[in-house]
Image (cartoon, rainbow, N blue to C red; front, side):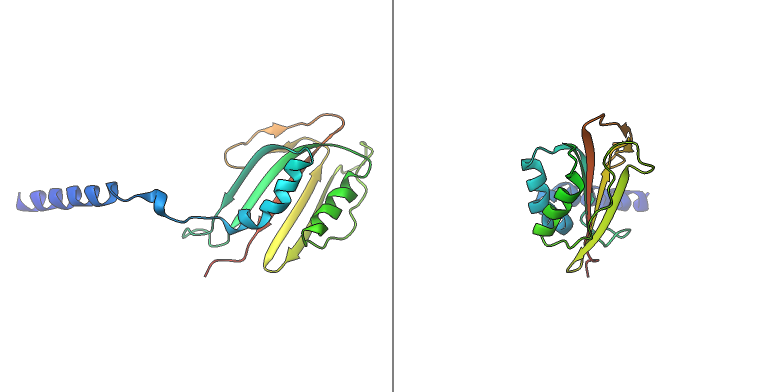
Length: 161
């Protein structure tokens, strides 16, 4: 009986302590999202419509590497691949010239290019076919239709120490 009363007091004290803890005061910023923000903001400015985004600040026991991914729909143009690579290069991501995936009807209408800047790794993926927007619980196929392209930007930062 005394043990149950003691455990009850411990439980109530713990609930009060954790219940009064203000989680909003924690600084849980995602360095990968912050690093990608200037580039992703520019994609917003040039007419990108965000489909979905997700990320992890890398502070949990299961993941110490911050990452952030965002998918956009944009109007397709004959030079889209080159233009988006040139834009990435303006933000310091050195990339090889992209393969030509325009013209709809190629064997693989998707391309992916990886670049490293400092400790960050950027994966830029362009798709002209339906893709799974499987980020943050948005598991559904997205088809953008003719004249549109899906651009996915994913940035992975080095592990936190």
